[in-house]
Amino acid sequence: MAKKIFINLPVANLKKSMHFYTAIGFTNNPQFTDETAACMVLTEEIYVMLLTHQKLATFTSKEIIDAKKYIGAINCISLDSPDEVNIIANNAIKNGGIEPAPPQDYGFMQQRSFEDPDGHHWEVIFMDMSKFVG
Image (cartoon, rainbow, N blue to C red; front, top):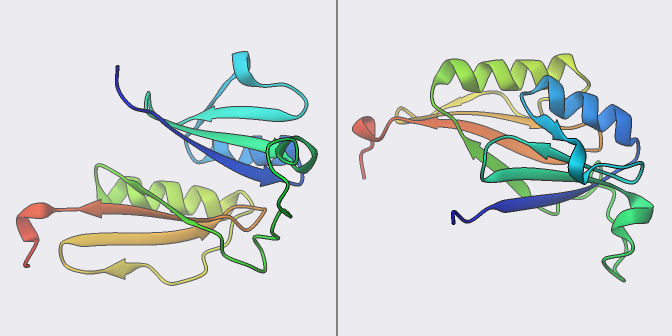
């Protein structure tokens, strides 16, 4: 069985966050979704669990950060083309996200960054390993 990753994110407004993640290409798995959490699927291996603050608090005794003020993690997804990078980043911005830094072109890698409505930082990249100099 393939390994899977579940990224758990605290969100202030579950429905708004579900709309945002749907707009950038995730689909909802209703089997693991209720009024306190939503399972958003990007691939068979990549899932984002959107959790209300109350739901996340049941898994930890730590204070939940305000991701608009503090960085706790940078989530990065490798994509199949520069066009896919731009489509996802542009859809993120059109649907309530912000772009905290300009796009980057490293020759072998194209990178865009965005923050979701709760401030969680994401990067989308395309790497052309045939251009990698290292």
